[in-house]
Structure formats: C-alpha cells, structure tokens
Image (tube, rainbow, N blue to C red):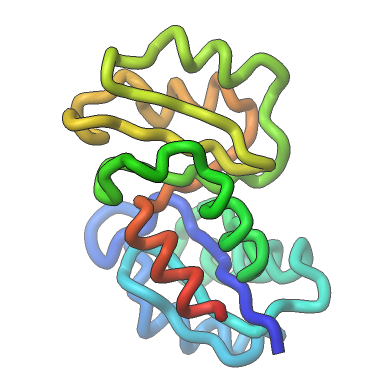
Amino acid sequence: MSRSVLLLRAVNVSGHNSVPMARLREVLAAETDLADVSTYIASGNILCRTPRDPDAACAAVHAAIRVEFGVDTPVIHRTHAQLASSESAQPFPEGDAKFVHAMFLQGSPSEGAIEALEQRLLPAERIALVGDDTWIDYGEGGVHSTRLTKAVLDRALGVAGTARNLRTTRTLIELTA
C-alpha cells in the first residue's frame, strides 16, 4: 500500500481560514473516497492511502473544505516517492532545516519564474526548482524577513503552492513510508 499527503495552503485551527483537523478528518471520511486518513499538525497535512485518481481526490477535498468550512484552499498531492525524491534532490542540504522550505506546486511554474524570483532574494537566500517543487533557503533571517512574499511567489510562479519547512517535509516522508 502506498501512502500520500494532500497539502492544504494557508489553513489555521482558529480565526481566518479555520479548518480544525479533527473535524476535517470526519468530513473527509464522510464526503470523500480517501482511505486511511490522518492528519499531521494543524497546518493542513492530510495523510492517506494513495488515491487512484489524485486529481479527483484533490478536487473532492477542495470541495468538502469549501462547503464545510467556507475556506477556498488549494489542495496539492504528493506521493511518498515524490516527497522523497524532491527532498533528496533539494540543493541546500547544508541549510538549517528551520529555514529551508519546499514549496509544493500544483503544476509546473511559469517559464522564467525562478530567474524572476532570484532578483528579489536577500543576500543569504537561495532558490531552486526541483520538478514541480520550489526549494527556498531563507538563510538566517528566516521567512519573516524575506521579500519572497506569498503574493510575489504566486505572481512569479503562476501556479498555486504551499510551503513546508525541511523538518516537516522529512516527517511527511516518514509518515507516508
């Protein structure tokens, strides 16, 4: 049995974009065909048996979240193999696991996106594309000091994405193994 993760973007346990994970698991069990569903931390990581049709599964999860919680969030699928391959190919292995992030994209980014984003990097930052994942090393300043805001990334990449730090990505690899 292979396992996957469905990644939600910008969900919270309270306040704006509130999607409580316990209720989400209940909704997914009732409203989708996902099997062996669990969640990891409250930032929108849905673990499940790899769906036969990942695109249909993402659409069903998206619709269920919109109806139940009123939140319109992208849902991005990655298999264990995709997560492991991207992490092993990421170009910043010496970077601090708190400051190196994978931005998992819904599809291929716009041509020239990485080059455009490189123009906005702070001196300690680095960025690279690995398949449909953008890896960013925010350096010592971390994500809070970057000029690579959500709006800047969305505009340049031309496709939705959601980021996880390297620690979380490695945990997701373990949990989907």
